[in-house]
Image 1 (cartoon, rainbow, N blue to C red):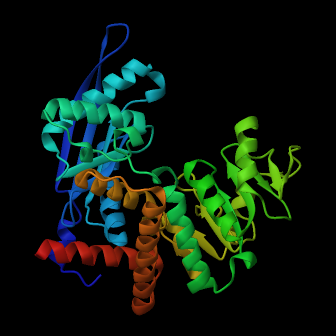
Image 2: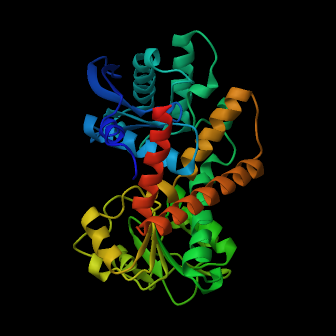
Image 3: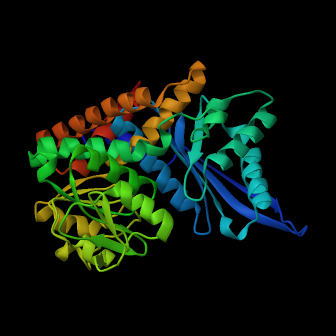
Length: 400
């Protein structure tokens, strides 16, 4: 990393962790106490930045680790923001809409005295969305006694959200794949086969952008299974099919025609182990493990999910010469566009989607080139290069 040991020692710990308990009044009149946290990891580059998640498995260590990840991600793509993360230990699916709103407002009411749009800017994460961010924004403004839409990103357009936010992560990932094709594979898109695991917001959009660029998408999947065949798939038609059927495996859409039979269904395990040029895990963490890594045959893996490759499995892949584009680079389009939203709110501006995506493309290309150059100069893998680059950028600011 070429960073002073004293800086590394500081980067082992978050600067501050706020721990609180939300009193949640249930619809039946009873009270539940919900544990919650906000980790403010490092603000050397700018305000703490990171989402708030509602999940039954949320705990303090997880929030601290994710806040460190966010700091690295912001530093890698060169946006002036630090790392933060928040969460409440609750299963939101067990709550009514009114209970969920009371939870969101309760979280922000307790957090509000510790944040401002110049110090800490939350966003949506697991099980939170633009509606929940709207409730939190309203609650913050009540507590603060002033309007400040920049306090939260990931809002709906009517609340001051940014255009292009929904497609940003997938679009940014597609830009990275283009750079991989140009600098690593040195092939045209029409000669590159791609498998994408996950067909949610990230997976479906990166599939559509890559399809438009001419890549051969040979398999797609969701949690129910995968679809694959000899011919390149059309993700636009598959998305329409999924809206009707509810799952990917019965949607073999090639050209302008769909076959709804399921004879092209394969398992997710088979998809991960298929022989393709680029594999894009865009679903959950730990999909490639020490158990299945020796059967993975992709030449390049672009991590659109957070942590889809277990550390032990990554060592095996690197020894085999597989190129891995890390999540802190590949899926950073979302946080970069959150930064754009913050800037728009601060300047009282509203940018059109084309302008947002044009700025995002420039940021992603620049980030890839810096990581690629660092990897070649240091003769190391892309993840190590990305972390070294991020640490150096934070260290430089910490010293000044």
